Image (cartoon, rainbow, N blue to C red; front, side):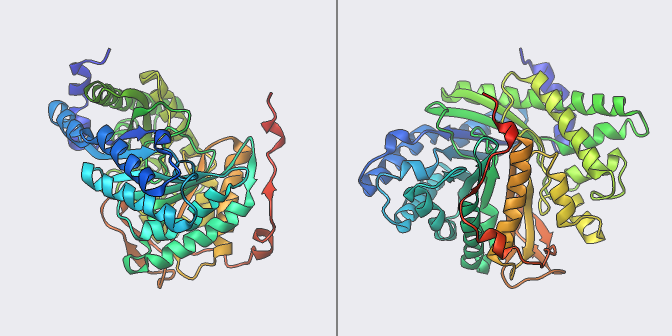
Length: 454
């Protein structure tokens, strides 16, 4: 049982150490909105989302007031729109119309983001999948709150290299269409390998087809809490270090469990999962990189960084699974550059490169996240970066992702300001050698031999 004492115990974490419930995300199935007529489909989508989520924001605010727990975002995820729109969308502009419908209802119910303008193409693409992918740039350029994700590979199916090549072009076009806002559209677009379908965090959230009609997932974040706890055990053994992280993660996850259960009860919606992810913000003291420094590194990126991150990620998961029977999503440590002041400092000091970040993604929760790159980076190079990250996920049977932002008109040494939780970022250099001939091949990279487990 979760009791009031456990909430009181976390008051110091909330007031002094940046503990928050990063998001309550309502997942909504749109499978019953499928219709051969586009206008009818859009009407059904708007009505289903509005009816389901009209009280979501109010409920989050009530829980926050009652327990004194900051709930930063209230969000919605929906069934991948490539599936929902397959019967009625004959052109990419038809999918854009659905995106604009999603944006409109997101504004009506008052949520921060709506995820699920998505396609699952790890093995191949249907005509509808390809239309949606080609619609992404215009959809993100003409909406404010819609987020898009595409699953390009998995351990069981391999990597769809045709989709990888196309997504390099899509990211470039999205950057161009939103260049007046420093290519901000790319911050709302992520590509995955092994994407989980119960992820409450944007931009990658969508409501999986194996989920129920409506679900409540909660994402909790507390890098500042973990760092503060580790300050008390400086110089201690790895055993003490691990136990401290694990116990802290347990307490943080219990807060998420409480919020998830309360939201589920008040909204009459099933409880899904708690995602305990150390997701940083630009706020001072809310940094995953600072945790790595507290463990013993001068900067994130120094030798030993990958080992320290592996330790952190594993202990966070171990603490979380003891605190809730339903831990899921991306639980672990995020390493976005623009959203983490410690990561920005490491880049500016020359301690952290794109190649080192790629190595770190082998052991973190997601992948290359919120990384600003030169605006003249080619589509083929972006596809090559994506292919490398998809390979890490496929071979290691873990979730990996790429969210890079080619900032049109800017180059290495300049800084881009995104604002809010997205923070700011130095433009990072990208390897200039070509992979064009590799990316231009068609077909898919087969699944690894260890995927055959039947």
